[in-house]
Structures are given as structure tokens and as C-alpha cells.
Length: 421
Image (cartoon, rainbow, N blue to C red; front, side):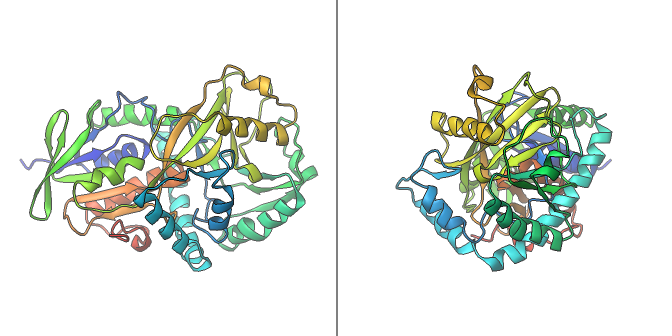
């Protein structure tokens, strides 16, 4: 009897779990290796806004972002903060980001992001059925709230226009029309852009439910296990060297989020990536019952109802991997909430412990998905930036198609992990 082909998933965050699911569904013997201590470990998605957003069709590397980044760079309270430091990897990443921030890149990337996001949204519906609606998956749409008319006009002529051209419905609403949606809280805004197709979930619930499903499917987990090296024979990886010993498999998949680049460095590969630290605050018993998720557009703060809790998250801090919680970053989130939602105050957040996680940000705002040319049995899915939750199931299914040698359901040319080799 032929032994099933085996695969080791190197990283047990939301992308790794989804990849494990689609490979196990193909009949592979799958092992997930994760340096943290269990299915509830604090990966990047856990404290995120939980958006499943086909509306996010414009990549982070877009016209105007370089100048905004330079303007915000010296202000640690800004939505997009880059800590100045002498770091060759950061400087190279910044140069590549500058090169990608143009209209031609957006024109190529936006249809691809639309297809990836729509595919993932459909897959979330399937997974929600399989896990018995235990992930808090809700199809309530998403609003971008704009405080000023100038910002609303920019949003209408920018993201809303591009989304509608790509077939992702975007409705431009004034303040009265926005209030008529019954969001459950008083707003101080000029208007909004509403994306009816967007959805959201509670990441911790989804990952717990999916981990349970994987265990039932026979997927094995190696918690508290760090990969520190590799064994290579010719053009194949023969084993991952870990703190639990060498792990042998037919296929290896890097899904280590913002740590993937460092993991790949031992293989002579280059995956330019920066850790974009984001913060969130979750109110366990908010005074107001918000009915739909929304983004405070000018401040880049996301607000998501998750069951009986309410989460506020945002900021992008490019400062490397460190455990420092900058108080001014947290204060910026609270100040933004009070500006748009005047019924909230700093007292609502008293005693709430800030969470932070590291988004894996590629220079062009697109993930790395596919096989590496240098090795026949090594693939990756990482670098999803703010779209890790949104794109996780689609990335997992695409890797399963690649590893099982089927034509990918989405063209992977722009996602080639060797594009900066």
C-alpha cells in the first residue's frame, strides 16, 4: 500500500492552518510546526480586525503612499510610522516599495486582489458551514467613514471608483444615508463608502474551530517547536531542523508570516519583508452595540463588532520585531475613536490591555504564493500585509493546487516568491 505524500507546514497562523486544511483534503499527511504553544497562540491574525474584504483591491504600494510615508515617518502617532534606523534590509525594502508605488502596479494588482479576495470569501462560507458557524462569520458589509467632505470625495474618486470598475459594489453615502443604516452609535462624519459584499469574523474563534477540524482530519501539530535550519540534497529540501529534531517530509511550506524571510534565509532565498506592527483594543462589554464593521478612514482605525465584544485596531509601525508597546500608538487609536464616535471617551478603554501583532508586509503589497525555483519541494504563502485574514483560505487552496500539480485557479505570476530573488 502506497504511503500518502507528506507535507510540513512551517508556521501555524491562520494562513498555515488554511494551507494544512486544503493539503489534508487532498490526502496528504500534514504536520503543522509552530514555535508558539497551542492553537490559541498569539499569531498576527488573533487580535486583528477580522475583515474578509473584497473591497481591499488597492495594494499598500500605491501612488501617494511614499510621500505620505515620508510625511508620517517622524511622527510616532501617525497611521503609518517607520522608525528611522540604519538597516540595509529596511532601506532595500523602502526602495522596492517606492518602485512599486505607481499607477501601473495598481492597474495590474487590483484585478488580482479582487479575484483572490472573492475566492477567499466564498471559501470562508464553505469553512463556516464545515465548522458549524463557530467562527462568528458575518456578512454585514463594511463602511469607510470619512470625517471631511474632501476625504469622502477622494474616497469616491479613488477606491470606490476602482472597486466599482472591477465589479465590487461600492456605494457613496452622505452622513444622513450612513446614519440610516443604523450602526448603533452616533457618528461625526461627512459620509461614507459602503461595501455590501464585505464580511468579518472573530479570528480566535475561526482558528480554534479550524484547528479542531484539522485534528479530526488527522493533521498533526508540533507546538513549541522552532525551525532553525534545513537539510538540502541537490534541489530538494530533505528535512527541517527544529528544536524537536529533524522533521522529514516530501513537501515543505513556509507560512511563518513576518518571520518567513528569516526562515528562508538559511536556504539562500530572499523574501523582502518588513514586520508592520499593528495594535488593537477590545472592549469586553461596550456601552453601544455596533451593528456593522467600519474603518475610520483618515485615521486608519478599524472597528469590528465580534459577538458581544467590540474591537478597535489600526496603525502600521515599521520598527522590526520588538515587544515594545508605544503608548502614543494606542492613544492615537483612542483619539480617533472619540473624533468619529463622540459618545465614546478614553474612560471606555480604561483597563483594556493593548494587543499587538506583526503584519508581514512585502514591498509591493502583494503576497508571496507558490514554489521557489531553487527547490522542487519548497513553497510559500506569506507577505499578506493587512490581508492575512482575508486571503488565508484562498492562499491555502492555491498552494494545494500548486503542490498537487494542478493549474492554479488564479494566475500566480505577480505573486511569484522569486520576484525579488
